Length: 230
Image (cartoon, rainbow, N blue to C red; front, side, top):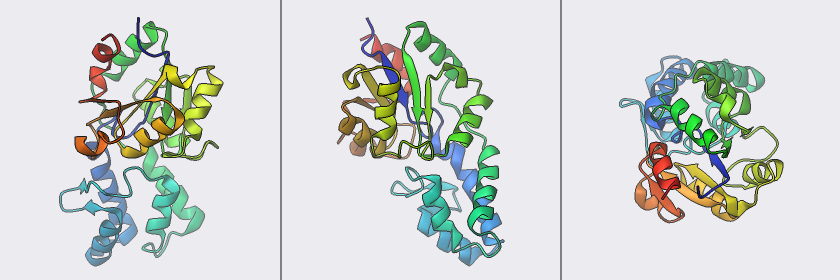
């Protein structure tokens, strides 16, 4: 018998490798925003905790667990031509072009989980529409019973609204659900909501950081089937 009736996943750094997916994307966005100004790009990269020469995020980057709204607020002062709604529309259009690197064969994993009658959800601090677009590109959106972004009306992690909504809408007790994520925001939210907290190492956070809040650490979501049957 499997341990849980419901599993709710973070997206970036959990379903998809973080650095490999977002590094090149952010570098391209910074070039557009800063209009090839190296000094401006250097300043904005520092604000975002990003090493643009290596296209890698630092461990304490606010971008990692931040919301789209927080990202927009951080970059707006560096943009001369795009402000407010225009900047938001530009970033949303860039998000739709993001090429994600999946962690393993996601279709195989979710086919297995659904065959075990597990209810599945996604709780991301990204916006809902880009999230759904990315799941559609990978042809895995059909497996999810619940998808929430930071703009879906349930708040965002480390708040617990998304996790509470998952449990309420699918008639699950918190003790029947595990949250899987790569950041402390994910795990803190899980613990506050009464969920089992599973940390994965496909994001930027170190094992030692995740261990402060996790009930279990896995190398990646590829290890879930073995763990769930243990």
